[in-house]
Length: 282
Image (cartoon, rainbow, N blue to C red; front, side):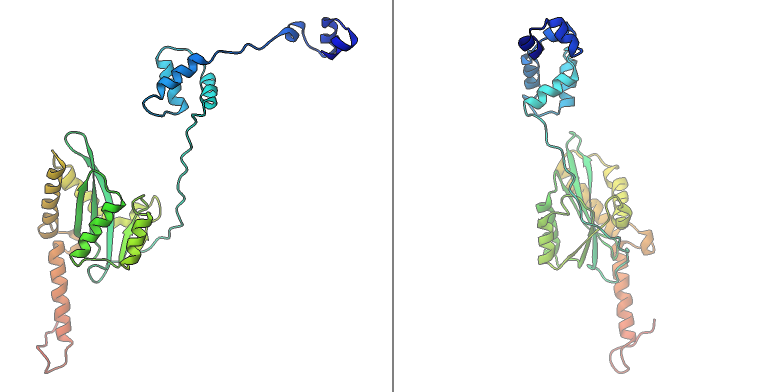
């Protein structure tokens, strides 16, 4: 342009000096009207917010042949970009050995399961067992079990005189919350977290979950939440008092607890000095 205005050169010669065609010199970019694209995007997000790939599919399903780059450009200009989900960084977890406690209420294991009612509604179960005799302490059935309901279940067991010294759990959002940490600190309960993606480090509750899945969840149809709670309570009683456990010498959890109690009592009587009580040999 300076060669044409200052040196009065013809357009063809000035374009040849800068290696440009005359048509390129006269070209003016056409401003596209994006009002139609804006309207289509707004219709797609009237009910709920969608990402750009989903909006592109919805617009094309209507039969509009619009380039996905154009939709993405307009989507960004409207400042509709959804924030990326940042995965919460967990602290480093160390593997701990699973040892069978010598007494009850030393270490508990806890986990969640899910199933659905006949009407399609999902529900969750909170499973808690005592590692000492595999006794099932809780099978709470709720539509949702946030941290507050989890603490409520632990408080109910506490009111029954049951409270562990250690609680083995995974890294779910309910378990890593500050509320549960506060409750554990106030009740002198140690929270032992397994490593992410290592369910075998909580093998006792996983073994229980398999039994619960086969004998309770997969074997029954649940017509309502109360019906599911009723069946869970019946199965919990059967599991603790009637069902033999191979890891307990084919005893039920309650039988194993009574057997160990009588065994310890006989040992304590055998260790008493002569003349005090009745001595028993084991």
